[in-house]
Length: 420
Image (cartoon, rainbow, N blue to C red; front, side):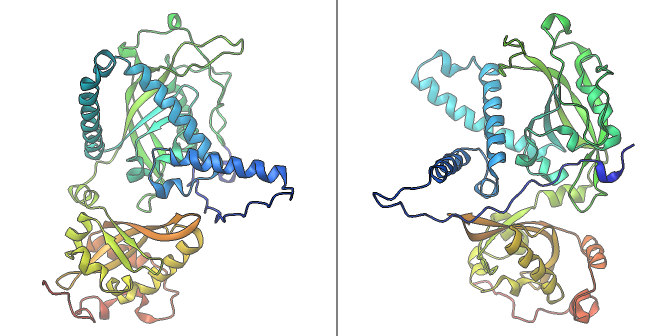
């Protein structure tokens, strides 16, 4: 087995974007560098391409050039698949009125799909025969900590524990018997070269032999795991249509099999975990952390209206005194790197109550410059909060930095916000 230092696992593929400046156009008669002009045109086209990707703006702003190209290729392949899989629609057969109805129905289906993903205890994963992640639902972030854009069109083996990679490779093969000559490289996973089959070499797509149910450990970035999360995969091998791949001789290859599966944690969530998952909320802040917005869930959890939150000045007024230095450290880290990392602290809710939250804040850029902060926060129980508090470093210069006793149960130092 390879040493741990040589084993490759997935990590967040984020780069702080370079601040963009508008360069003046050279005056007539002054020669400009052709390579600079070429780079400028290329960067402009990449920015335009990135703006077309179906991801939130805060995600797009943090993509490097290779990620923009990778996700663009992935989007086009997914679109090609659905163009074939859904080629017979009412809009194709009828006129404009039916097309309008179909668009409304598509929007309703999209909303229903989002609700189904939220209700699902897991995430959807599609992996090609050559071990690339063809699709992962956005809910993968709730279980593994990776954003959807981090894993799409990347090798699935970077997510899988080195001891489970051979089993996953076996499950990708239609006969559960991949070519033994390929072997398994424990450091980087099985090779990417795929063996292509013609339909007459494969059993029918609806055969029970194509069903899959197995377990493996996936890389997890959330701090409530040991680095890996045991997941159960249930699904089947199906043809991935519309990819139009060509063989070495230039001939068009038939559709190949891919694993369509739902990944669920082996340990089912408790009722409390389900409840807290449904109460994740987001707040918007100025760069100095002054609140300027809060979603409906946040208002429900904290008890404030958006106006009450946004007229109190600094957001640090809502943070427990024993947590302020801890939060300030994360704030500085976010300004430097673009992301705070997971931070656990107490927020002062209405009616003099302290609420433990786990927060991750990100810088949002506009025109290449930091514009505002979006913080995603998940409520924690008091027991979870105290557990995090005990793990916190005690190197801060004041005794109250541990948050013990004195400041925990007393009333807030500032008067509570009264109902109008």
